[in-house]
Image 1: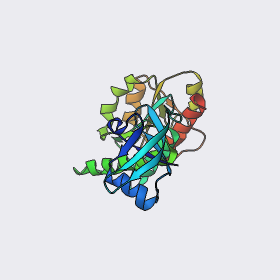
Image 2 (image 1 turned 30 degrees about the horizontal axis):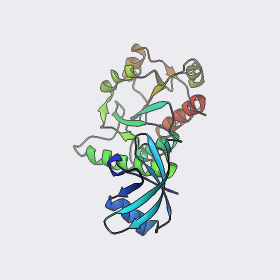
Image 3 (image 1 turned 90 degrees about the horizontal axis):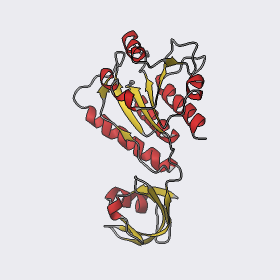
Image 4 (image 1 turned 90 degrees about the vertical axis):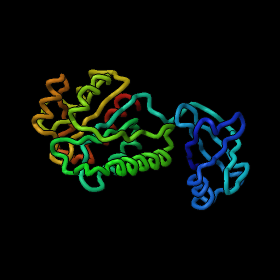
Amino acid sequence: MSRFFVDSSDIGTEYININDKGDIKHMTKVLRLSVGDAVDISDGVIWEYETEISEISNEEVILKITDKQHFAREPEIEICLYQGIPKAGKMGNIIQKSVELGVKKIVPVFMDRTVVLDKGKFDKKIERWQKVSSEAVKQCKRGIIPKVAINVKFKDILPELNEYDLVVFPYENENNRTIKDLLSENNPKSVAVIIGPEGGFSDNEAKSLIDNGILGVSLGKTILRTETAGPTAIAMIMYEYEI
């Protein structure tokens, strides 16, 4: 069953109106749905609906509500991924896998070893990455679309980290304390995961985190690529607290 997201203003007591031209095209031209077919709907806030198509036109698709319930697949724990911006197309893959695993928010971070430069057109990348998040959600049928935030500098994330119950800082130079140790010692409702770009964290960045009481952890005996580390940490967190 296909999933689409609509604004709560388009949801009535018995029917839901789909007015987005892109969604209508996807329903009718790509999926070739017709009257009577089932469609999965989320309001992106708290409710999800099972519906069937009642009417189709070029301007709108009207869905009859057959069932309504609270999100069934949305994790209780809230995870924010602070990802050091990587090269090439790696960020899209990181976002896709992190969204599938249950992350709630992704923040692209310029770090000391980030190679990519901000040439004043980074808003286009954010827009593209947000679309990746939206498509990943439709595939895995989560209740919300995780937000890809505006890119920030490393120094700007330090005050934000105080807002989380737990901060996970995978650090390649940490050989004693594992993420398993950290997770078993805590029972958080919100978690921040900080991942460095290619080349990892600089000494100054690592020191800044440690000076703020955030100790590094190991994700295992091998050194993971930046595009692997984030999803790996998220999967471990979900295994510990959700499954």
